[in-house]
Length: 118
Length: 107
Image 1: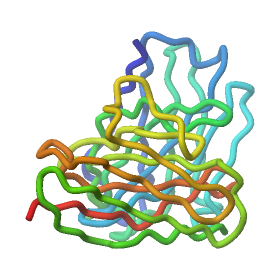
Image 2: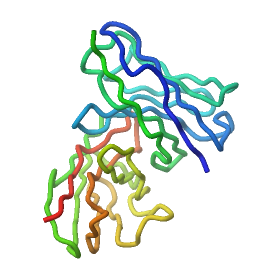
Image 3: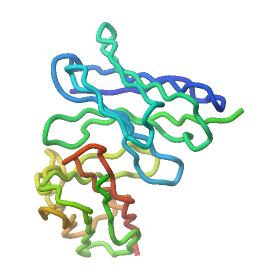
Image 4: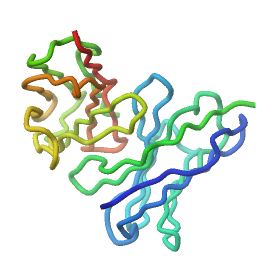
């Protein structure tokens, strides 16, 4: 069974960098599949942030272009998200998820609420 | 970007009712569409992918259909545990985009 778990600071100051990790168990992230980040502001819908392929190729949401980096740490079987220059609008629950070609995101991590506030 | 428009945004139904949620894409996405169920405080759960393929373990009262730009999610007989918000998502092209959600409430 593949399980994903997000971790990282729950509170980030405006203009600073949000950093989250997603630890994957039950599957080697470098072997196959695509790994993504999705966020959900409180009371709102879902927004795709970015995806990294097992090859290392990355794709990002243009609405966040220039502020987002998704990368691997295969030694820890983790992938990570960095979002720079955050504002209150970046306050959201951040989810990590896995998908393969032709499929939706499954499974998802449980999500972590990150608040941007001074 | 491919815009995904869901309707209705909220619906009230009774146990046993047939519920239909529609998702419209702003451009052709073939069958590259997923449906998710999200309960309060929980992560979304994949129900259907490739527009009509039911995920293993998902009750057969859920079904999906459509191709191109028009898609539907049907719950054939609403159960209390189906109270949730449902999202469609296209994965035909980047950026991946989600519909705004359809909240199903019990009447």
